[in-house]
Length: 253
Image (cartoon, rainbow, N blue to C red; front, side, top):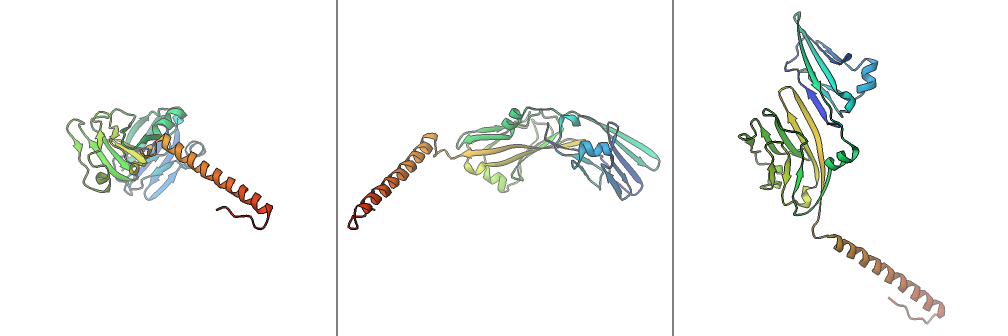
């Protein structure tokens, strides 16, 4: 999806004898020779991927951040080791969404006590590992066969905060938070790992509104404040008129 970060894995650990090259269609993105690396040195690469490429120097895996729909295409990995070539092609399709749809997915508001579902936007493949984080704290995880391998996250700050309030859809990985609290407001991110790639998605900034402050209550507070301000203004005017009438005028407080 547009805005995601995607890592393409080489499944190797580089050594001094290997040469690794990455291409997008016919554009050279990366070249690693021994302990030397060149990232996005070509003009075409800079025009398209400026500051959006990250390289794992231990494995040669490539991360492209903030995907756009023009990034769809074939990513070609070439590994040369002792005269033997190894090739792998990743076909990446980027799904564009409208600004309204993106805002709907990434920003949600809910009243305290209600339930809210954070959609993953995908159908889970059988070998995918999907992890949910709340403000960088792991809160839920599902891996392998969705029917058999729901993983219980070890007790930590995240699971204590959401104890017995999370429901994970085994088919899609979408996450439902029940009985929301104001402390649930924050950033929720989803990580989808497969054997060949990893997708990072900042899915939702969730805002939970205090249920005690209903629309009527907030309106009442605003009206009350306006009435107090108005009364104070009248008192000041009354005082000034009396004060102008003579030094013996009584002060109103």
